[in-house]
Length: 288
Image 1 (cartoon, rainbow, N blue to C red):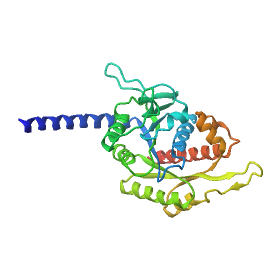
Image 2: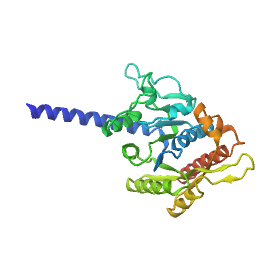
Image 3: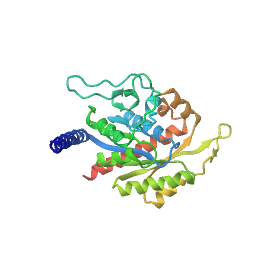
Image 4: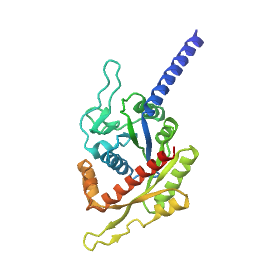
């Protein structure tokens, strides 16, 4: 009797897994390009790059989804100034992401946490894997040109789950110029190659600070490390993003206004990077 009960439970679990796999496949079939923004270490501005990339692509008229799988430290809702919680679907319908712009949808664990946004998320691997899969299978995404996925630093459960769950996802690797960051980037490159994930390119963040008095660039974290690593690894170098106090203030205030201020070097370089990504995908589509 115990064996039969166990066998039934395993059969039900397999059926549920297969049903979810089908839902994931259907959802991903409506999304053209999936970009995993990752980094080898924390503190390099990965979430800022993911947030502003989603915003920049949306402002170029693309239909964009932004999925925050940094489950222990979700920062995207605060960077965007998102309000409210995600509502569960009624009558068997799927829940919908938060609509930030008419063509920009956002999903993160923080809006699911209720009123206490500062509560710690203490989850082990299997639960994290389940949540990421549900973000794709149980959420009603629109037809999208881009799904931008913000992953926690390193090569743990979250990026591995994305690699295994989202075929065709491409990695955008964020680094800063100094060697301690570049050493971890090389691990990220190795990770992508081991799991057969295409690398879209490398972006170097915090690449110099323009002096507010004389205008010259101050190399706080060295320079050109990201470009040299990309060249050595035969990868696309997407650009260098300078440090700017305005980026910090805008990030704390929440919103995407900084992308429209072309007087800021960060904004100019970021929009150039977004153009590179659009052009790279446009030329790929032209080959088919």
